[in-house]
Image (cartoon, rainbow, N blue to C red; front, top):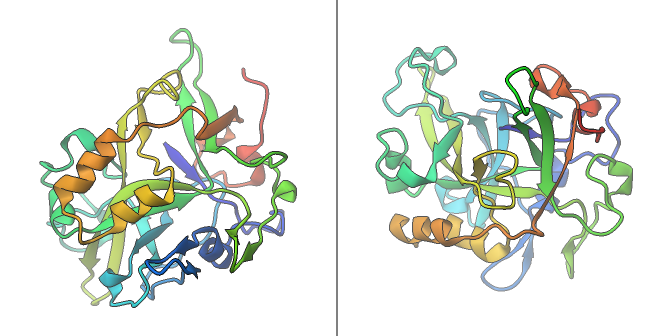
Length: 283
C-alpha cells in the first residue's frame, strides 16, 4: 500500500492540500462543540506533499495535543512512515534490522514486541491522506498487477483526480466543505537522535479486507469513517483494550470508499507527478 498526497510541484493545481490547507481539512468539533482548525506541532521533521508516498517518507498525522503539552485536543504532526524500533541505536536512516514497519496487523498488534510499547503509552495517531494505492493481481502469473487509487466517497461532482472540481472552503458554522480526506488508524513512536533531535515515526494499522475491498487485496487499512471513531481513537483516557476492541468491531461500509484504476507509473515511488492518480482504462 502506498499513500498519495496532492503535490506542490509546479504542475500541481493551485488547490492542493498543502500543510496549511490540511489544517482546515482536518477540522473537528471540540468537547464544547466548537469548530477547531488544527495547527502543526513543532518538531524536527517537515511534511512536504507528494503524489506518491512510500515507506520512509514523511506523513501528516493527527495526534492528541497532550503528547505535545498542547491545550488543543488535536494537533498535526509530521512523522516518518515506518516505525523506528524502540531498541534501535544510531542513525535512524540506516537501520540494519530490515523490518517492514509501515503496516501493522490489527490481529496481533497488542502482543507485538515492536508495537506494544506505543500502545502502552497510548501513542495513537490518525494518518491523513487524500487516498492510497493498492495493486490487484492479474489473472495469471504473466499478468502485471493493476494499481488502483482508493479514496473517500466525495460529494456529487467532485472528482478525486481533478482538483478543479474541489471546493476547498471552510467556515466557523459548517466547517470544512472541501475534498474529504481519508483518516487511517495508526500508532507512533518517538526516537531521539545522537544530536538530541526527537523524530516521530508511525505505522498504519491494517486488517483483513471485507467485501468492500476483498476483490482488490486481502488486507486493508483501518479507515476511521466518522468523527466518533476518530475521537475515540485519539482519546488518551480510553485504555488500549477498549479502543482496539472498537477497531475490531468497526465495519467498513460499502458507500464509504471509491476507487479507479491508475497508471503503473505509481509502481516507482520516485515518480511523483500528477499523472499518478489520473483515472485510466484498466489493462
